[in-house]
Image 1 (cartoon, helix red, strand yellow):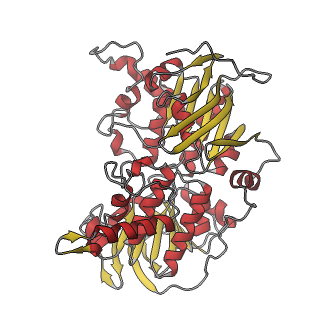
Image 2 (cartoon, helix red, strand yellow):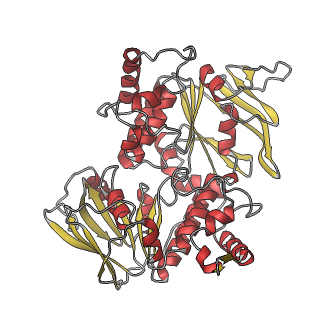
Image 3 (cartoon, rainbow, N blue to C red):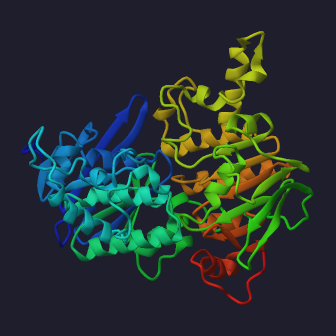
Length: 523
């Protein structure tokens, strides 16, 4: 760890911050990611950093944790200027960052994953002492509310939300003093999210500093003590959370737009002509029934991890085989639907956007345009020759229509912010959806303006007659966007809500945790 002793120490408030960034600037090529940013983070406090995609939030975390070096400015930790040479050095000093994308080794056990990178002081090529590792792993899993899982089980055998909690657990292994969480709830359902919040509150009580980079305003209101808002690399506002601060106040300060301007008001209550039947679906009242999705209808499936929604949709799109002994089957436009692969479903007009950018959809060695257009190249091919000029023209049109911020379509997709990458993936999925679009976590890690734009595009696609089936852990999003909501618990559809709104929230949450309410609408 290098120190910088010639830097004038910034003035702090009544209590000295645990960590402070002062005058940070960082440029990536032509992009000014940070411009003279100063923020203080205190022990025993949960500090949220909000901003649009590309505002510079994650860049601050990566500078603090040693992944990037700042062009200008200083990081102060424990009242000393520091410059960590890599994340390992930062972690050993007590500063850890939990990235939005998973960094787990899928073929290793939970125990092995939690210890990766946490072996401070262990010499190279030393023996692994399992008996010494188990107690610490048990303590961390209990802290996460995961004490019931088998620590010797492979990580990739667990649902994505559990893997997200295990990723968070890695950061706790070294007993850090400050943790930066980059969109930690993006893949968590309501139950898992509350479990994570409980962990955050415990860290606060223990005197740890937590920095929460998030686009979910409900998360801010639920756990934070202070909020810093960023825009285009600048800090534009900072304020404590108290009883006078609500969602509308935060939205107004975040976007500079009047509260309510992001709400969807044009949800239709019309009838939809038949398109797709889910046959023999188990329901809460016992037995099975047929559930239908109409042309132009947006159906939201909502439930906690393991509810069965993900496996149901992945069988529908051909990613998972339909078991021979299951009664569940599908009919599309009156004909049996049993695709053998995702590509076969795509050729027949059923497009799928899986959850998780890093593992499902982003090709890091390909350009923005190549990632966007890879499912449509047949349209621009004659005698085996691709018309690159037409491809580039269409790609440019789609990127601008989707509001993607980019310098050149020939840049690598990974050069874009996470939210802009998500816009590209959604544009790709929409462009191939002639009959049905299946979305998993469509706006995970996306800022409020981008989420609104994506919602509008989904609604516009549905207006053309394309059915949309969405699996989202974001309940406000599910309510705002869906014409119909199916709630699921342990593989069964609990209830169906037509034209749902906020008044259905309590009933929906009761459904997904297995509770029964007498006045629920029957499926």
